[in-house]
Image (cartoon, rainbow over all chains, first blue to last red):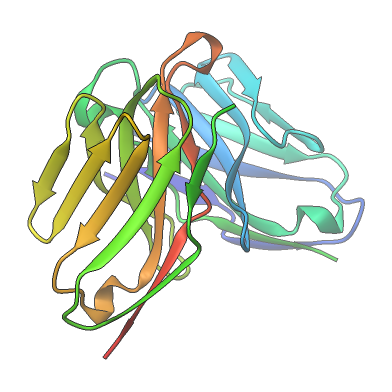
Amino acid sequence: NAGVTQTPKFRVLKTGQSMTLLCAQDMNHEYMYWYRQDPGMGLRLIHYSVGEGTTAKGEVPDGYNVSRLKKQNFLLGLESAAPSQTSVYFCASSYSRTGGADTEAFFGQGTRLTVV
Amino acid sequence: GEDVEQSLFLSVREGDSSVINCTYTDSSSTYLYWYKQEPGAGLQLLTYIFSNMDMKQDQRLTVLLNKKDKHLSLRIADTQTGDSAIYFCAERIDRGSTLGRLYFGRGTQLTVWP
């Protein structure tokens, strides 16, 4: 059981370049999330999805786009990368519709992105 | 809004107890969680508590919830050097458009000295 898998694990981009981060989960979870983690800032939600074909903005959505064409995949796109987007990006998924341990979020190992 | 606050740093000696505190603002939270992040890794769930509980114990971990004061704490007994990590408090909100969303604190860096 792979859980939540993020690709790539590391990437260096030049300012203005574009890229897509892929998140895949094999737990049949309804909800998926993209967070960024910066020193002293904790985790900040970029975008999230409550189901296939739906997406919603989080706290810091500017400069990012997302798509959830398949339930198991959640893509995060940077159309024109900026140095301020240098960060560690985490994807997470959860079931969320019922109580108990099903509510926990499972996290990927992170993608370290540097924009120069 | 939904704010989750934690102190940023905590240092303890090996064998002592650690207490990490968290406050939150939204009284409609249904579950509260503690996640652990080791260097270079993602977050892993340590424990969680349902909002109608006061306390939950799981081996060395004790979670206390004061819903009136919106205060959550995590106590680690007999802290070991392997417990050094960042600990995140999170609350789950089930209300309208935020159904199922998790809100995280900034994390508390726990350092355990031998």
